[in-house]
Length: 237
Ligand SMILES: [Mn+2]
Image 1 (cartoon, rainbow, N blue to C red):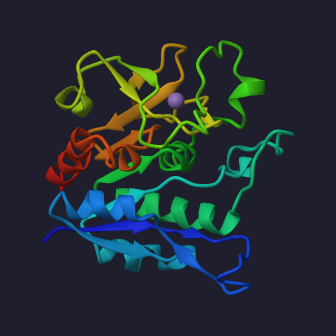
Image 2 (tube, protein in one colour; image 1 turned 30 degrees about the vertical axis):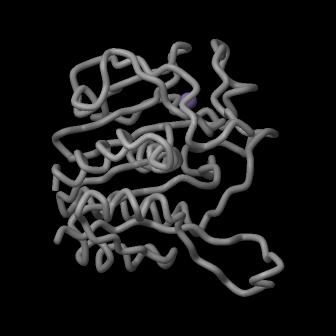
């Protein structure tokens, strides 16, 4: 069975159940997507970047999940007034995982924040807040409180890519982000955009990097077709 590592999230704020205890978690939808693609999920607790090599040694591929904003210090900016919460421990760990997976020639799938951290790890930059920094903004890229599993905005495919196996030239996806790719890192190619030209997917077949800005794992609840993205990724291993 192929093993897919998935980086986790910190519960940054104590709640009624967990008080001030440290909790590390991953949403079950990602796990379902991996298992239903006939692979074995291995959840990586956020830890020291020095462990990245051992973690990547233990798997065949890496998935980077959604979550907090990426700290702008990684692309040389101060925090914008509309930056949301960040987690520098998670940023440092995930950047190390990305670089190590590339080093070991193991496929990477980035989802939402995962797409953004890949871009930043490889030298790209982000809009810290689309609403205040992206001049051509037309589309609602954070559909909340519309449900997670409802696709809302158009996805326009820009070239022949792995996504061509999943979608026609246009499709609908869900959208829960306020950050996005500004400068794309060298070597990555844009696969799809929204109708207002925000980067919604990129890939690099040479380094086996695949990334989407929407949340296929949340679509799984009501859209069985969304499983195909996980299946295709696991077939790349
Ligand atoms: Mn979007």
